[in-house]
Length: 589
Image (cartoon, rainbow, N blue to C red; front, side, top):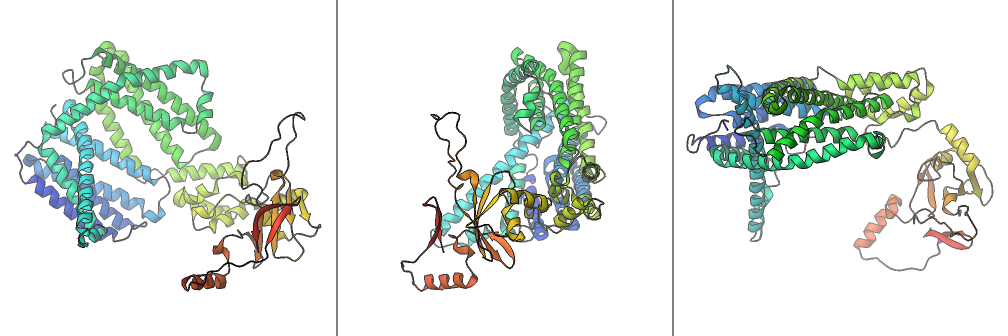
């Protein structure tokens, strides 16, 4: 291995330096974020936050005593790029559901750039030696994981000490650990110190890295056998079971491809001396290289079917991007295998370097707002809606309003003036919803649903006119629903209470033969009456046993009486629904 390290005792100031940087970073982060969770952070604060954290982390990974200036410049450059990207992405209040992928791409780009910088520095930036790049990449991953393990140990130890002192009445440490001004700097200090100590003891890190690669290499035959059997079974099963079994076909296939990529590189190492000499592992790596392109092809086909059925969404566009990258990597590996034959690993290693640069550049571009998947998805989905490919009541309005970012909300405002009255009505209704969870489902025009309800509704004890507001409440899935099953309503004209019963809870299905066992509903809540109460002209479901739904005056009296110990048992008359002389549901007032 030829990666960089800080040899033991060669830079004694590095651990205290990184501890100080980590502590300062934690304090700055707390000053920017504040005491709360800060769900909404402005663009400037977000940029400052990313600049400080990214600069500190990059410096901790790439700094060496003999080249502090260039290490600092690289860290500052990475922090500046991250700050600019997050600044132009805007405040978190305007982020859509897929913005996390931008942050993922930024992390991938920086994670690839660091080992490229570390390896290029060894040749005064004249070239990038693959062995050094390979070693630096694996070492950085091990350092990152071990750094957070060290943080976890420090935090657990701190909580243990806080509880120990709490036993004798000293609670300041316990209280401090609950304050952001204390635990954020503590985490920063622990990570910085742990990273520096690990880099200073490079022999231990390299040993752990070797063990990790050895363990991953041993898993290569297992994955190769599994993927090989999977691909061999497809001609007999066809692809249809893939679509029937799950909607996550593409992510699963991509995960298998990434696993194959990692295991192949764990086996071949950074050169002939570093790679495994075991023939079984070599053949397994060879087989995994051949399976990558078929997996990528199936993933792309699955995604194409999904897009053809439902159109573009930001998530599908992100998946499409990753599938394209996977196809590029898999094709490169197949070409290396074909051209290199039994010496294919010698061609894969330099190809890895080129692929790393491509992925770094592409992910950095994807992290910026230059390519808006939200805008592309919005145009496609609105076009499908307006062309009639998707009915208004089948359209995903919640995604347009809350998942597609600013382009989706702008399109929603435009749809309020659509020529289609149904689209206008739903768009206006959705725009009034301040939060996603306020949209349980798209509410289609209630008129045809109410008309269908009237055909299957029985009113007892005698047929009377049912108010339109009560009918609107009855078509809710929690009452009579919008299905075809009958429904019975206990309602007297002018009453402010109604009780609904679904017929399918009391009807025995037709039997195949008189001797066949009787089929009954076993859902314990099916036969419970649905109570609806009219308040201010609106009918809403009410659980008669829920004290939280009582009037404010009753609830105040309950609280006061309970506090004063006025608790007693009384015999009172109650009402209850009877069906065929048998009580159904709970008694109520």
